[in-house]
Length: 350
Image 1: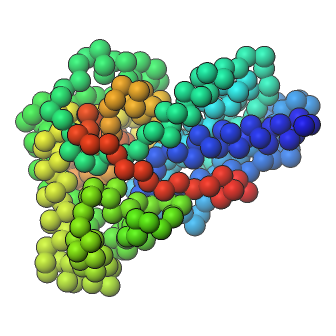
Image 2: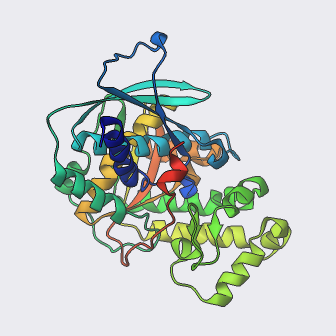
C-alpha cells in the first residue's frame, strides 16, 4: 500500500468517527474533499509529506428556513471537524486548521504524519462517538455535582466560549415557561415546519441517511399515533394542525420535559459570528463525548434561540451579557437513546 492509499484509508477511518457528530435535525450538513494542492496565496505551510482536506457545507442539506439556523450549521460542522481532527491526531497526524469561511469553503485541514499515535485512544473515541445519541426523553431527578460539571468543561477554551450550569428550580421553571410560550413559533411557522417535516422518517424499518425517526422524537409510540401525527403534522394540513392545537401540544410537551430536568447547560460567546459558532461546535464535541463517558445525556433546546423574542427573554432571565449560542437539558436519561440515521462515508467524501 503506497502512502496515498494509506492516507485514503486513514481518512475513511476518521470519517467513520466524525460522521456520528450531532447536528440540527440530524441534517449532517458537511462535505469533505481531498485537495491535491492549495493555492500559494492561502499562506499554508506545504511539504512533500503534507496532505490537505477541506470541510465545507453540503448545500443540499443546510437548514435555511430561519436566518439564525446559519449559526447551528456552523456549530454542527464544528463538532464534525473536531471529531475528524481528533481521529487524525490519534492516528499520528499533526493537524493544523485554517479558517476561510467563504462561499465554497469553511476550513482546510493540513495534515502531516508524526511518530506519535494511540490505537487505544482512537478505539475509545470511536466507541464513544458511535454510542452517543441525542436523548429527548425524560431524565432522572439526579443533579450532577460540581466536580462532574468541572470535568465536563475542563478543556473549555474560555477565551472564546464560556459555560453556565443551571440547577435552580425557579430558573428552570421560568425557562420551561418560555418554551411553552414560544416554541410554538417554530411548530406553527409553515416554512420552518416544512423544513423540519422533511427530516422526519415515519418508517422505522426503512434505512435513512439523515433526519430522525418518530422514535427519536417521542420514543416508542403506537401505529395509530404515528399515522395520526403524520397526517395532522403534514405541512399541507397546517390549518388543521393549528385548529387541533398541535403546535401548542408540542410546545407544552417540551416545556414539561424541561420543567422536570434537574439541570441545564448554557454555552455563550462574546459574539454570534460564524467563527464563534464553529468554535462552539469544537468545544461542544469534547464536552458531549465526556458527558457520554460520564453517563450523561444532552438535549439541545434550540427553539429558544431561533427567534428574537425568546432569545432576548432567555438572556434577561439568565442576566447574561454574552451571546447565548447553546442551551440544553443535561442529565441521566431514564431510558437509552434511540439510534438515529447516519450518512455513509461515500456520501460525505467528494
